[in-house]
Length: 289
Image (cartoon, rainbow, N blue to C red; front, side, top):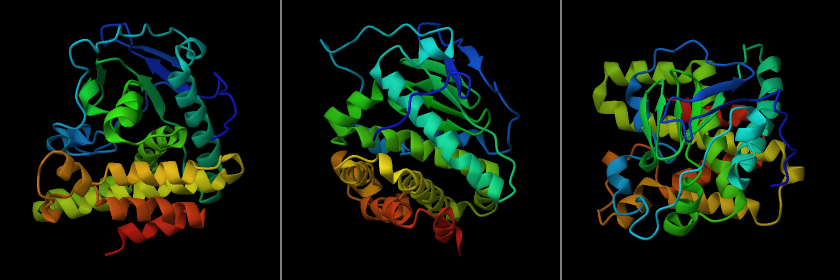
């Protein structure tokens, strides 16, 4: 996907790489007020995948594979230029901001951009400790998208989710959770889950599929920037992180009752729905009773 270079004055980035997890807040916006979503969202890693499903699939680098942790920057420009993965992530964040802001303005809903937080191996978030094994996640308490860019290598080598657009999809999906935070949908779902714990998993699946759909809407609204194969790359990534596929990879029999984020078929369908409609209202279907 061919995206414009980021404007360091238009995105908010925090870099915890090489800082012992303390972090350096920088850029526009800073931290915003905390919501009321339960801290349990910290467990939504790898697009929100249950950690027990990832055992044996995404692991830390083994002997002889350890890499030197990158040193972060102290400005947005520095942090986004640490390596190509960092630059691509900042470009994606910038595009997401520019795509979704007018959508919110048209709907007359207050809009705030999220922050992108880089960390390596371990870091801190408003939802608790961040660790590389968790993969990318969105923390509603500080409205941050947390990313260890080494996860991109794991996507390619261990999950089989290859291609540049698969990496864009990572951030676009987490941004979808930010949209849910701003619209109040995620708060409503968490309230329903606390009232009826037996529905916790199905309700969680609804959130994840809607976030996938929103990622597809973003791609569709920028279709002129898509390269050949991008759609296939995104759909393959959606397939590879489906609950049933991850359970199989971990040596477990798929159990629909344990799904928290949707099957491979459901996730592909949600992403495809957004791509084909280019309309965020098409994603409302996942919140209908």
